[in-house]
Length: 257
Image 1 (cartoon, rainbow, N blue to C red):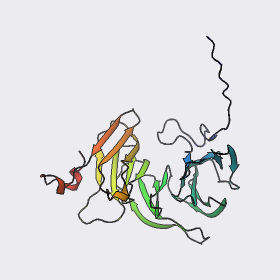
Image 2: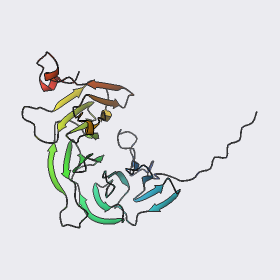
Image 3: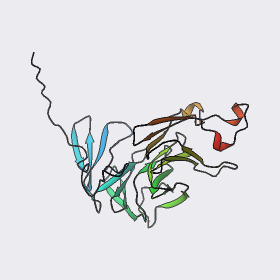
Image 4: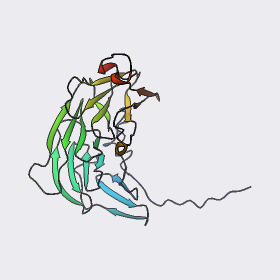
């Protein structure tokens, strides 16, 4: 029995994958540009070398934003309301874009290597990995300003470069994974008596760390579970117990088991 498939290539997404300047196969977490969906899931945003393509999945059309970065794009991030798009290239230059109009609002140079960036779910902040550190910045507005980027705080404590970061559903905490095989959990705002939690147990670099999604609208704001994945294929689940919910009097650093 012969089976014939009439599959045809419809669109090419993310031509930056495999570009030598944007990738380095020996370093996990640096595999070229990422792709993003808009909040409604109807459009796919994809870097193509130093340009940005937007694919409309409903009408099957493609538009290219009328702007360019200085070099190949390493990572992109879009705000929850789809108003702002952040573009980071391999030279660590950032471009702030009005996504709906395709207008460049600001350009900024980071001093250290930027591997990943992500807006907080509430849209008030965006986090950027800068070498061994994570910087959290206040989200800018759509107005053109001389210095729209305002730093909120810098988070340290990892011994090697940050490979991934992730926000909690209520935007109160942030995770950062590192090449040294550890993951650290910080609170965005200062909490009295809290010390950042260090999760160690992987035998190779941690390429992804993720909070369990919780329904903030149902007042379920406590972080219960964290998932981490390393380059050797290991997936670890970390579960949290709170001192006011158990009989033990563990310190905050012993909350994750």
